[in-house]
Image (cartoon, rainbow, N blue to C red; front, side, top):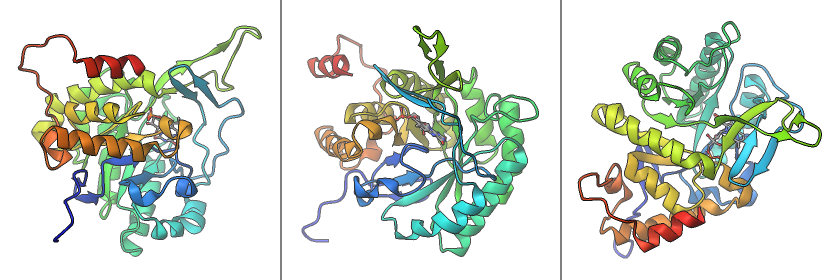
Length: 335
Ligand SMILES: Cc1cc2nc3c(=O)[nH]c(=O)nc-3n(C[C@H](O)[C@H](O)[C@H](O)COP(=O)(O)O)c2cc1C
């Protein structure tokens, strides 16, 4: 069209067209559309819902979320209204959302995941595609064994063998845990089961102690670390999974972990992510995705590219590595 320049941030993620690669992370943007009054959802790519379980859950008692110097620690306990109430009372609002909506599914047995995924997929089909993807939160413990569904290649294979066949209309991807000893193996196993993308990843197990009372600061004793402290850990996982399994299989990576500013997102893109999520940043400034998009657009231009997709995995591992540029040193010291 005359007079309009192409959007440098538009992407196609596993067949889903997104205005830009910014996705709001599960559990950090309300249940569905609650941030709409403070952030124009028409300026981001997609929202991920709070993780939905078959039955309603109140979650853990206070304290269940605490700020840290380098991020946050949370043990919300998957508080959500449950599948039926989500579908009946909340899902209809998704029709009015000006961005794509991905549903996060969680559970404590394989049947739980199958129930949520099958129902959400059927709702998406009946509603003309109001939901475009299902993200499986595989960091939940199996009630029978106590082991997380995403902790080993064998367990994620078993889960996906059951869930993959019931998801026919939405795209499907698991959200892997950075705490898994063998993330590349788990990612490879998920790819073998035909996932459309991989999210890397969830929070890192962590804890805080109140030294005066000598009690754990979180009622759940332990929780999940998110925000800036998580970013370099997630970055290395994205780098490893991209190079070792995802690139060869042509499966896109959605990165998550400590994107607070555009440089964090640019690092994920260079390491091999096609899109990224923002979570903790929204608590500090719910409009931060807009600044990240502005910074990324300018960076794509400075790199001489017309679209951010040209920079996916464009990390230069061949040139001799010297001291960091002044700009990078300054940016790193501020992060
Ligand atoms: C308060 C809070 C609640 C969260 N709830 C969920 C959830 O329901 N499901 C899920 O898969 N991840 C959940 N997460 C993890 C985030 O989606 C994200 O993976 C993680 O926070 C790392 O990204 P960040 O550093 O940008 O926050 C939650 C994180 C926070 C801070």
